[in-house]
Image 1 (spheres, helix red, strand yellow):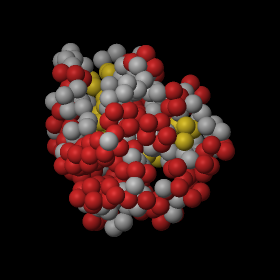
Image 2 (cartoon, rainbow, N blue to C red):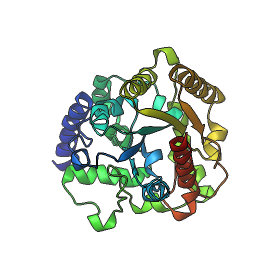
Image 3 (tube, rainbow, N blue to C red):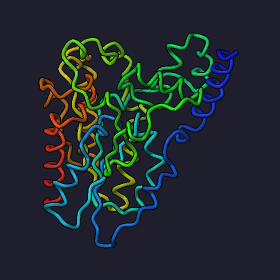
Image 4 (cartoon, helix red, strand yellow):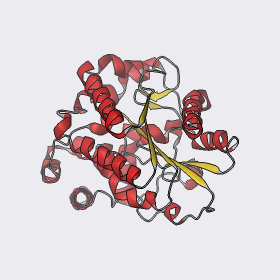
Length: 309
C-alpha cells in the first residue's frame, strides 16, 4: 500500500512540475520584496549550483570594501538553465541592477531530448530513473543524499533541520548541506556519477538549441533595460575535462564567442583554471570550503575589473 502511494504521488508530482517548471522554484521568495536605497548599485550573479557553490558573502565583502555603494547577491538556483531562469527575469529587472554576471557551462546548454509526456510514461522503467535528482530540479551534487531527500519529501519525513543547513546571506536561493562543504579525494572523484553521465550533456546544433536561444534572449532583454551583462564559464575538474568530448567544448566556446561578438559582452573563462587543485566536491562543483576560496576571489576580482571599466 505504501509503495502504491509513493508511486501514485510521484506520478502526480511529475505531471505538476513538467507542466509548470517554475512551480518548484522560489517565485514568491521574500528576496524579491527586498528594498534597497536608491543610490545603491546592485550586482547580481546568476547561474546554477556551480555558481551557488561560491562564497557569496566573501565576494560581497571584497566588493563593498572597495565600493561602498555596491552590493553583490548570488541568485543561483539549483538545476538552473536559461529556460528555467527566464521566468525570473522581470523580477530581477525590478531591482534595476547595474551588472549581471551570468555563470554558465556546457551542461546548461544541454538540448532537451525528452518531451514532458515521455518523462511521465517512462515511470515504469524504474525508480532509479524517476528518482534521479535532475528530474526534480535538483543538481546531482550528492545523488544518494538527494534521493533520500526526495523520498522523505513524499513521505513527509523531516530531513535536516534548519540548524543542519548553512545559509549565505548573499545567496538567498541557495543553501549548503554538509556534503557540499567537503573536498573529495581523487578516488571519490573518479567514482562520481558526473563522469558516468557526461555523455548526456550534448549541445547539438547550436542554431536549433532552445537553451542557447533563450540565453541570447535573456542577454538582449537585460541590455535593453540598460543592464551590463558579463559572462563567465564555471570551472570543471580535470577528470571531467579528460572525458568530455572535445567537440562539446569547441561548440560551447564557439557559442560564447559568437554571443560575445553579437552582444558586445565580456567573457571570462574559468573552465580549466582550477582543474588540478584540491578544491572539488565533485567533478563539476567546487566545494563550499575555505580551501576553495581562490575561485570566489577570482570572481570578486572579475567584478572589480568590470565595475572599474
